[in-house]
Amino acid sequence: MSAKYLNSQPAGPGTLEGETQEEETAGASPSNVDLPRLQRAVRELLFAVGEDPDREGLRETPGRVARMYAELFSGLHDEPREHLRKFFTEKYDEVVLVRDISFNSMCEHHLLPFMGQTHIGYIPNGRVIGLSKLARVVESVSRRPQVQERMTEEIANLLVSELDAKGVAVVVEATHTCMTIRGVRKPGSICVTSALKGLFRSNLSSRSEIMQLIYGDRR
Ligand SMILES: [Zn+2]
Image (spheres, rainbow, N blue to C red):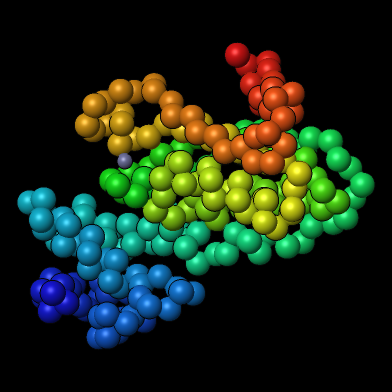
């Protein structure tokens, strides 16, 4: 399998630096993305759909797409937990909500983007986190092959485990290009997922308070 891969290798000037013959191990390092391998794969993909990757307009495409994928999947090399370790201690036990944290992710079933907004609310239990850190967590969790349901759950669980929050509510609203440009082609449809933990799950008034805060002036 790896031999087939190597056959369509561009070689020469188009090859990215750091190229290695160790096909199977080259991408193994968690700290970097195997750009040459990505580049070969994109070239192969172009061949497979009946294109000529050597025509002028496509010549730079494999390299460009390789770098783009490295960016879109950069979360794979980031530990979202780390962003939550720099909390500060505060005697504040009311709801904290950050609304409309925008994100872009890649649906792992089609490798097509889905994008939208994440709302994160929590009731601290002595530990409060910088607001930008929540955005970092969203970034880290979304920049990888993902499904929206899991992403929602992952963010909520991270807040529960790292902040020991009394309640956590995560709501994600997204449009999926795999729904809009292919398959059923339903542009405009929005997928909403939510994960409620602790007080937001068990206490009805806490739950309606957070939903009111998230949706209040919009619905
Ligand atoms: Zn999909």
